[in-house]
Image 1 (cartoon, one colour):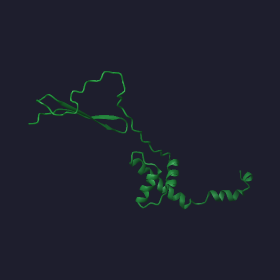
Image 2 (cartoon, rainbow, N blue to C red; image 1 turned 120 degrees about the vertical axis):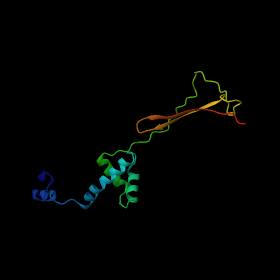
Image 3 (cartoon, one colour; image 1 turned 60 degrees about the vertical axis):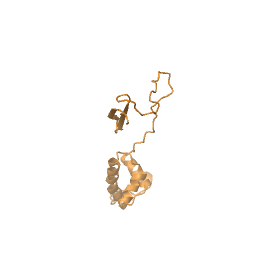
Image 4 (cartoon, one colour; image 1 turned 90 degrees about the vertical axis):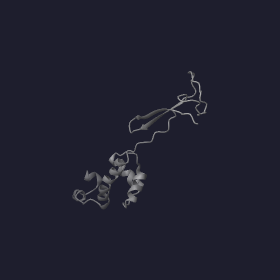
Length: 140
């Protein structure tokens, strides 16, 4: 290989024995910090946010350096999913009549009820957190 590259064998082996450069040492120190920030923020921080976080902590790091180190470490941020509209009003199925018609005044007790469902999104799925059904009481 040395003959093909035109390098003296002794120079090649001396080059192999050289101590690690300052930049390499700093990057080895920086990588665990990048990993910690990345994992601590649900694996959604990209290089720009990680570099900003490091600078805020007093560690000089640019986004290109953070990007290169993240790629070398195999850290890929999760992409946000776009908002998906789940209500489909354009269908041919029967629609229940709207008896309330935005008039939430009750003439008598137990005449009008309302209901609400709340969902919580977790990392993997949705969890039904609360279902409430209450009567709208008469006002006097």
